[in-house]
Length: 358
Image 1 (cartoon, rainbow, N blue to C red):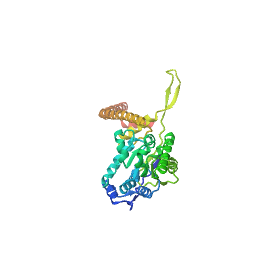
Image 2: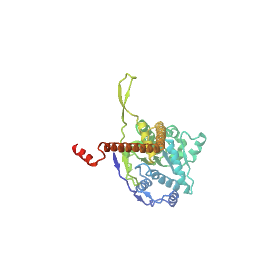
Image 3: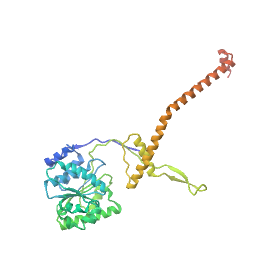
Image 4: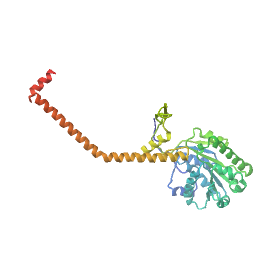
C-alpha cells in the first residue's frame, strides 16, 4: 500500500494571445483562469508546435486543444480541424462540450461527428460544411482517406489534428492507427500542401513523447507533464485475489488451489466502497467486463443491504437476549454465593479461615 499525497492547484492567467471572444466563451462556462499545464499547452499549440499533454485523469486536458482550435476557427473562416477519438462515446461527449463553448462566438462554427452512425443523407452536408470534424481511426481508413478528394475543403485547410486517449493506440490497433495517421500526413502535405499541428492527450502512458512521435512519425513533440490541477490524497494498493481450494473430477477428484476471479473481487470491493459512500470508478478493458462488474456489484450491494437490514431488525432481540443472559448469570452467581454462606454458617470469620487454609 502506498499513499499518494495531495497536490495543490497551480494556476496561470489566460494567455494574452486569446481574443476577447474566446475570453467571453470561457467566462460563459465559468473559467476565468487556467491550470499551469493548460496555459503551457495552449501557448505551444497556438505557436504551431506539436504537443503531447500527459497529465492525470480529470485534469482538464480537453481545454488544452479546444481553446486553440476554436480560437483558430473563429479567426480564420477557412481553417478546419480534425478530432480523432478511439470510441464513439468519447466523440459524443466532446461534441457536447464544444457546442457549449461555441455558443459565445459570433461566427457559426459547424461541428459534426463523422462515423459509422452518421446517416448517409447527412454525410454530403458534413463534407461540404463542417469545419471541425470528429471521427475515429476506422472511419478515417474506410471513408475519409480512400475518398480524400471529397474532403478536399477540409484537408487543404486543416490547421489542427487532435488525437485524444493516445495511450489506447497500442498493439495491433496501435500499429494500424500509426499507418493511417502517416497516410493522412502524406495526403495533407503531398497533395494539398497542408501541414497541420498535432495535439495528443494521454493520462496513463509511461513514455508519452516517444510513443506519439512514433505513432504519427513526427520529428519533434513538446512534452507537457507538469500537472497543475488539484488532487486529493490517495491510497495505491495491489489486490491479489485470495486462494480457494476446489475439487476437480467430482467427489473422488483431487483438490486444486485456484485464485478467485478478479472481476468478482473488484465487484466485492466496489460494492463495499459504494455502501460506505466513497466516490469510486472501476476501469475495465472491455464493455462486457464493465457490464459484468456492474451486475455483480448490484447483486452484492443488494445482498449486503439485506444483511444489514436483517441485522438492524434483529438488534433489539439480540440486546434483549443479552440482558436475559446477564440476569440469569447474575442469579446463578447469587445462588452460588448464598450456598457458600450456608456451608460456613454465614460467619465471615469462617470464610476467611477457609480462604487461609486454601
